[in-house]
Length: 219
Image (tube, rainbow, N blue to C red; front, side, top):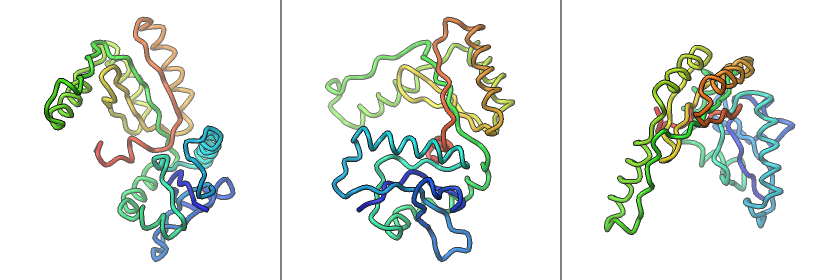
């Protein structure tokens, strides 16, 4: 039997009975908890039914309290094993969970105004040069300035934090942290933006657990 880890949580009651609660840093007076669902050792994690089950549990956990999303596929055979793997992140996770208690992450993904062609690997003799070109193509994409300004003006006053993220060469997204009781306000903002900028394709999605704002690489 194995545990498939879903997220990191501040309190045990944020997890149970929706999922198994695995204690991390047991020597600490303030441990963190990992939510997990049990699976057979031979259970394929890519199985559709299992993936739907994990998605449903994660949604229920977010209704309970803020948590940090763990990349799907992180599995462990015991609480000790999970705690050992998570150990390098625990201090940072605790700080985030305390700071952002009651908040959720949302994203507003916008089609790039100037989508840049993805570079072909065959055009580069060096893997390093290809990765640099790939990174450059993603960061070259931009949003129409008027739309971006309107988004910033409408969303940032509602959000605790917000940042634009380059995901690929054809889109950019604004990721932001929002108090859980302001989701309807942001949805109303999205409807207003659709009316004001009917030719700009974008998608508002969420709420999500902390992901972009839990990634130290984005800080």
